[in-house]
Structure formats: C-alpha cells, structure tokens
Image 1 (cartoon, rainbow, N blue to C red):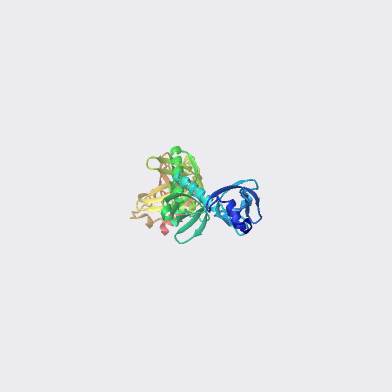
Image 2 (image 1 turned 60 degrees about the vertical axis):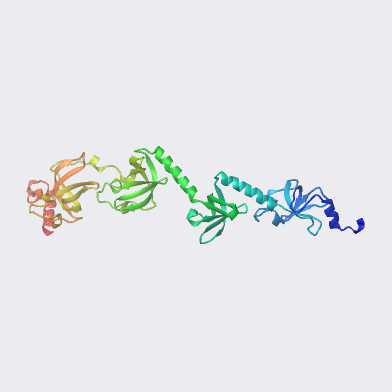
Length: 368
C-alpha cells in the first residue's frame, strides 16, 4: 500500500500495533485541564487522554486535587483513536479492581468502615465504598443517617449481596465499656451517671452503659419521698456504689445529693415533747416527721385514750400534732411517739407555748 494512501488512523494503529483495547498502559502526566481532563505521554506518536468521567467511579474525585504533571499513571486503553488522534484511556476499571481488592481485604480482616449514605429507602440505607454499594437494614443502622460506621456481616459478590451492620459495632463498644466498668467497679466509688428511668421505688441510673438501681430510700432521708419530685429522666447526677454483685452484674447506688444523715445530728431524749407532722397512715399506726429526714412511729394504741380500729379515725396525713417521745434508739433510727400521753396532762409542763400546742392538738384530735 502506498504510504500516501494510508490514513492517519492506520498510521496510528500501526505505531501502536502492540497495544490492544483493554490493555493496561503506564504513562506520565503531561498536564491536567481545568475541567479535569488528563493528558498522558505514552511514549508513542499519540498522547493518551483520560476524560474526567473516566478518571474515577466517584465523580467527586478530582484529579486536580490528587495528581500533578510528572506523576506516573496507569490506565486501560478503551479506544485507539478518540476522533482527534489521541488514545482514549480510563482509570475507572483499574480503580474498581484496586477498590474491590482493598475492600475484600478489609472485610477479611473484619475492619470497620465509615462511609457516606448514598440512598435511603423504607428497608434501609445504601452506602458507598469506592464505588461498591453496601446495604444496611434500618434495624442494623444504629440510627445513623448521613455517614455510617459499620462492619460487613455478609459478603456474596456472585449474588451482588453485601450487607453491613452498624449495630454490631455499637454492641461491641457497649460490651467493652461494660467489661471495663465491672473490672474496676468498687463499693464506695463515685461515678457520674444519667437517670435512665424512674419508677415508684426509685430510679435506674446509666453509668457507661451499665444500669444500677438507686432506691428511693437512697435519694432522700424523707421516708415518703417521690422519686419524680427529686430527679428527672435524662438528668446527670453523681452516685456512689452502695452494694455490688459482679457475678450477676447488679449494683445498688446512693445519690450524693441526698445530703448528710440528719440522724447523726439528732438531739432528742425520752420524755421530750415535739411537734410532728403526720406523713403516712398504716393499719398499725402513723409515721410522723419530727424534722426533715427524721420520723417516728405513733402506734395505734398511742394515738388516743379511747379504743380505735384505725388511725384515720383520729389522724390524717399532713396534720400537725404534739407528741411525746416514749422510746428512743438513735443508733438504729427508731423513735416511738405518743399523743395519748399528752391528753389532759398539759398542766404538767411549765412552758406556755407547750400548753398552747397541746391544747391545740387536743382540739384537732377531737374535731377529727
């Protein structure tokens, strides 16, 4: 064939007779245009061109930020002539192969991924790892919606089935925290916890993922205290471990906001006349508050001279009456009181205030 009749494309193809479509070539970057097109020196009569769209499977990857003239680059030949005498190249296939290999190594090593969410649907999330799509069901998403930390728990490339789980990581981290807590927990140690829930008998406090019971008796010295009046759900408080059962992973807590034990400062003696407030009525008597945190028992037989079948016949919650201390055990926090012993005996006391209080008490009882 006469050389004059040979087309430019034939000359190009002859000059690259060793090159085939899909073959991997290595070249040196000559320049990168503002649009992201890469010009490559292939040591042939024609240069190679990598369009921006063939640089990466991820359109956010910008060669201007990752490459510079003089860098070596590997690509696949996808067309010997792009219509302008250049060899059309692509990095996408190479990057996919490398990404797949890297991905499989991470899966094999049970590594943690942290990738952006591409799509959301009613079944779960689709996340992307360098062009590889992973499905994370809502039940395994850990309520993450924009970027997800996960492990791959199922990988079946033949069926294009890749499933990830954020929950498995959260469970692992939770267990690690719990194990660390139980390994170092000691009676008397103080922690910062969060009120997780409240109930009639107390509150459950979360300490680094571990739940402890704070009984109402350890919240306040007031025997009739209501947990909802002392704490709120989500509130952060300081607590101390009162009792610990590491084997069954249970603990009882003390609220530091409870304050000092008022019984340690109590200054009472048998025979004292005190004004008390009825706090609680029981079939056998009434509990009465002498001062905040200190209560005594008025047995039903000590309420009045006449025989009654229940305390409600003479007393009511919130009522204030005068009573006499008839038995005292401060060490065991027990006080026995009597209203009956003051009935008709106000003349035995010198204090005019005491006489007035006793008289008022007698009137109150008679009115009830």
